[in-house]
Image (cartoon, rainbow, N blue to C red; front, top):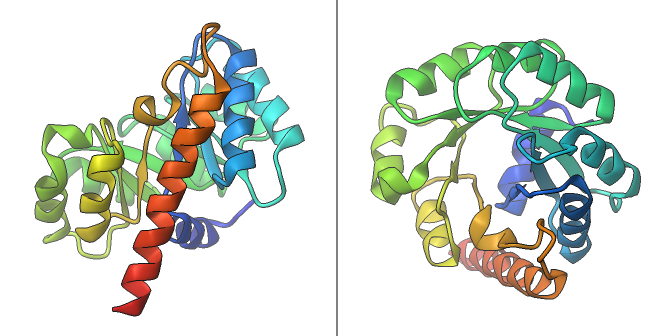
Amino acid sequence: MQTPEEFVAGVQESKLIAIVRGTNGKYATAAALALMEEGFRYVEVALTTPDAVSAIAEIRAHAPAGSLVGAGTVLTVGNVKEVMAAGAQFIVTPAICESVAEGARHGLPVVAGALTPSEVHAGMSQGATLIKLFPASLGGPNYLKALRDPFPKVPFIAVGGVGLAEAESYWNLGALAVGPGGPLVGDAASAAGDLGPLRQRAREYLGLASRFTDRTARQ
């Protein structure tokens, strides 16, 4: 498991955390592993997916070297215990809830969902590793900039309605990463899903992140 400090550095380097939310654990597992095979280093499986805990264990067992599987929509102390037992290597919450402090207590990297300045402060005070600006689409990149003015040292990722067209704007305004869900995964984590288009979208996100990194390194 990465330490919180290693997690921040890794997320900043990769610029992407994929969010898999589906109708069945088996399909979520296949989608997550496909994303990892394409090059995603951080993939979250939402606990709202049926059999998500079993899916996390299966993904952890078959993940390529260097790829980490996390659990999303982690709300309670019980959720933290469940996903840790399954092998989750980081947790993600949609809000400031008891799972933030519990995950931090166990040394897990915690990505805590927050929207307002008060929630950002509360999340960091409870031991969050990163703050997930959620839903980012509510205020857009300019809202991230406004939050970063009073919180310049808080590491943010942008989640919620972040497609290819929006990702670079968030990176330019200081987001360490973006967390694409629906725009990336589509229906690949459902019975009707097709992994071919998922892999193509994954390559597009990864290519965008690589080009952004190369361009900023030259500046």
